[in-house]
Image 1 (tube, rainbow, N blue to C red):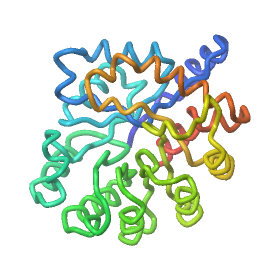
Image 2 (tube, helix red, strand yellow; image 1 turned 180 degrees about the horizontal axis):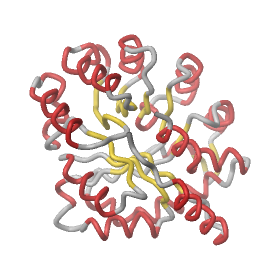
Image 3 (cartoon, rainbow, N blue to C red; image 1 turned 90 degrees about the vertical axis):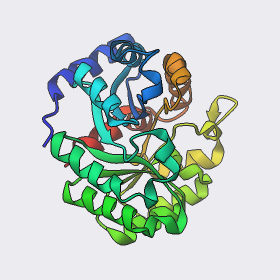
Length: 268
């Protein structure tokens, strides 16, 4: 079980409140191998702190990247175990039995709050390797962090109705579909990285506003630093996120900004 540093977190939140800046829980951070030569672990953590990120869900290809950031800042990083040892495996992992042995080895060696981000769509979610991943998440009581379409999410829940799933990018589905999925699956959360359609001229788009207000406890924000260059814009992205959150009621904005992530990932 993770031992989370709640008291320091409260101090950090209080310091941002005094500064008038909304703290953020970033639910989609990668520190992949191709970033290591240009962004040191110290620099990566400094960028997150500068952006006002108080906690981050981190997964990487390979997992060594996540472990580097966790070692640098255990007060900030929630480690998630990605099934890819290299980014090439993003398209092949669902057919690769060796992925399961890799996941088992890492799960025995380190502590995590989630498995993912992993990519899967449609009926591929029922393939044997994916089923074993779902079983491992259940065995270790871990969140599933899935980059998936709505069909795949439904299949994952059929395998384990008690699973907790964080839906990367809200599946790139339309807001009406996202709302329907939220109503159907009370253990589904969604993060909104790379969803520029949430806003329209700096305001929350109408369809998205309805969904966010209907399910204020089920959404989170994220950056998705899947390319090294994205580490250069973490602070800019955080500022953009705060601008559209400001168009929501304060309590809803705070939940989406950081409270939902904290509640989800400290519940075991």
